[in-house]
Image 1: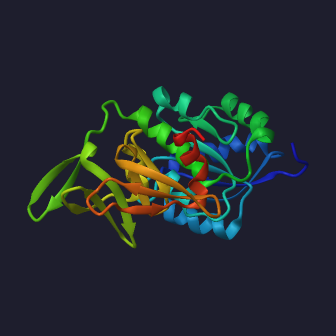
Image 2: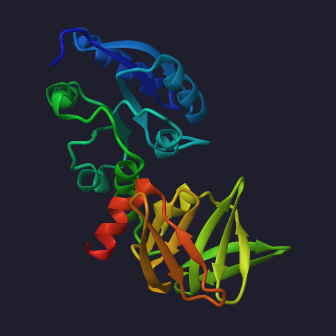
Length: 254
């Protein structure tokens, strides 16, 4: 453990939860020096970028940006200790040395374990690190497998089967779902979709999620990227982002 205390930020939308954690951290004043609190995701992004804390205690379920969406918007991700109330599916999703998690209500003896684990936690997480945990978290949370996606068309709701979806693509504020027949705007962000989509889908770029079952060709490209061709009418090609290289290789077993 390092000599001086870790500068720390508490992020939770519930005031009692923030107050409880603040009180518990006082037992470990040699380890944590709390700089501030944030009550929502937007405030969290601003304060993390401004204060550059060593450690953040981050609530997962918050209005606006959830915990994972907060991390996606950071250039430099500090040590992350997630706080969650979802006991029955948290354990497996967070079995990693990249991060730690605390179940609410946070207890002193469990916080002691976090203090002991701090030296093994990573100080720099990549987007793929975060998204792998995110996907595991939400796949375990969902009791039923997602088989379709709902989109609005005028006053109607359309149910599009996921096995017909070739890909999702984000363009500025909007996300479009594509099938061989048509495309529609989706109200969810790519990050929200990635949380819920089954394992047939893979994010290959910050603006694209593909259905692996509709991929017909993958070619290596420069700078550790890939050009992926889909089997839709236009034979759409997508160039992957470098930060998604590891998960693409894992998918292709290379």
